[in-house]
Image (cartoon, rainbow, N blue to C red; front, side, top):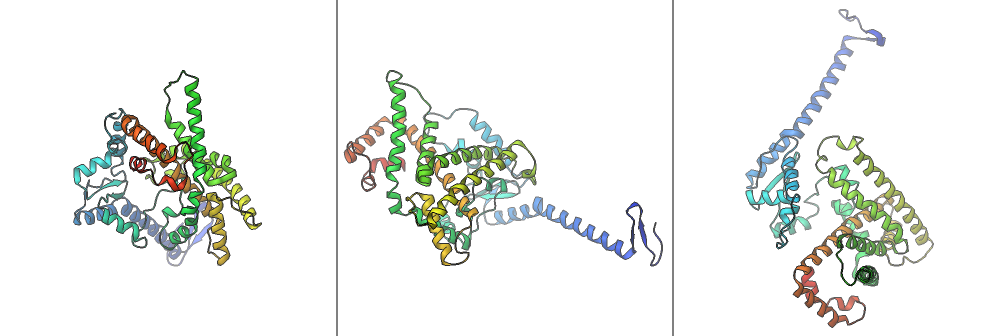
Length: 398
């Protein structure tokens, strides 16, 4: 009950006796928290996006007016579904309208200086090479955008860092990718490609000299095989298992894209969210087993075998020995290995299959490339020194 003056407030069944001043203080705190939460929500959902939109348009950058929460996501998803509902024109090389239809639509509508909305966050298109070069070199001025924690499960690593942390990780990672180390990997590439050709020849011999096959899974496998051998050396079978898990995670990430901007969605116990977290846990545990085994060998003075993981761990170990906190934590090493896969396996597989597709449509260039390879290498295996002489092949890949 409530009594006057300095008397107390009795809170029924809770058995609390509060003075009016205490009650007022509690109400004030609750009201303040609610107002603070409401203001931040309003700022995130409406005020900040509208303020950014106004500033962009003042600078001559055009785009759709902001729509609360969803932005352009609904239109983007609809346009992607429409683009993929029908096959590409087999006589066209213009792949952009199929892969990035809404980006193409936005630039066509608003010009090269334009933007679109990913939820309450705008994405600005930079098509001027000089501006892009400036952004890519001024790493302390242009910060990378924060991404959804769900996407960070796929990979993080130095490509997502800024400032001093980016510089530190890049310094440690770069020894694994210098030219002399790359030269040592050419025989690995040759072995994986030889295995692929042998499989295709076996299929041909069992089908009277001709057959139709889907090259995409073969190219994916050879790409992951190359990376596993180059990255993990004698542990490459373990590496391949990790890559297969991360390939599944890529597919799951694509399905999550349209939900990633919904606040709190990552906490929902959906099948996809649970599977993403289970894969992440399995990948980390598998990598830690390999990494700890390698670290033990490095500390015992054993050679790194020149695979990328060994070189990375050795570089990190030396940096850690120089100063406390100079190296990366084991968790950060795991992220760099995951990034190595993400940046390599899918990108290489897609480049290869697209190149094969274009060559199949231009048999005259197939013939030119084949003649050049025989002129440079004859029947010998490729080596690093002579690969640079393949001008026609380089032009085709470029």
